[in-house]
Length: 395
Image 1 (cartoon, rainbow, N blue to C red):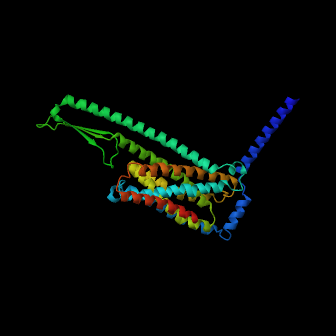
Image 2 (image 1 turned 90 degrees about the horizontal axis):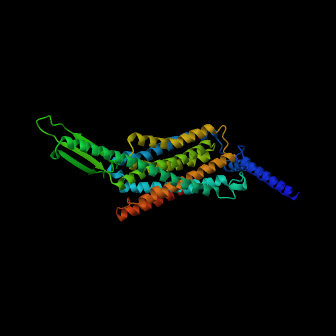
Image 3 (image 1 turned 90 degrees about the vertical axis):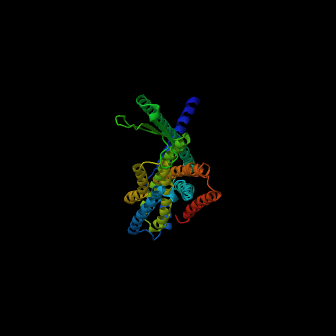
């Protein structure tokens, strides 16, 4: 009897636990408007609900953010052949440092704060949303996942380039053997050129040019081999990986920002966001465009990456505007989704800004100029972080 009673109590407690978990899940994923959120929104935006005016502001925001994004990401790509905007110039490093500060503040001050606000809402159950620091935990997990992805992508591209180098060396050896078999040593010139020019990808390339001896004079044979050092290849690989992961992080939170602005029906909410988001989009675009320029992508790839970045936030705004008829931003489900995605974006942006932008430039070999250049870069970094942080007062 005693054993049966214990079993019954255990089953009852298990069923009770499952019921509690189910209730918490249902409460967290409910699509019904939360009274507290509706009341708070009504108190903050009383007399400021105007769908027509909000739609006009959304159109202005889409145009302004699109122009800012195109200018930001396009400047480093168009100006990389000009001396003042080359990727090793002092002006470029200072501008990139300012953009890195903007991205760092976006992760810490804006995205992480917004995630905490959404997930600490009284509309959500206390467990787990308010009893556990979910935003910080999710941001940490996203940063660690980005680290793993960064590592795997770097190894993949390094292996790919090693295989390409091995094929080029084999082709060069075969061409050299074929050349020596048909000509004397005096007719062969072997040129080895170190690919230090930043405009060339630091990969191994081989070109063999041979001329026959049927003419009355001999042209000889020439073997030209362009060799990149191991460090140059590694730096090129890192630039490729950084540009792709940075675009992933920026695009993910740009979609969230666009949707949040798009579903708003309050001109009072949208108006201050237009200038803030245009400023934010310009300097994020500059940081991304600088990484794409350093990665030395082909023109088509660079244009596709830049275009994808530029249209993401305007597309998010358009999608949000279309969802206003059936999307409920005050529901627990919307709060959970927004909080989780904001946390993920914060983790990615914080990792990328600290590790792949700030540490790579300030602790690597790029900050080797004069003391004045280094001081200017640090000042630009702090100004970028402070300026983006100050925008949190209005947006």
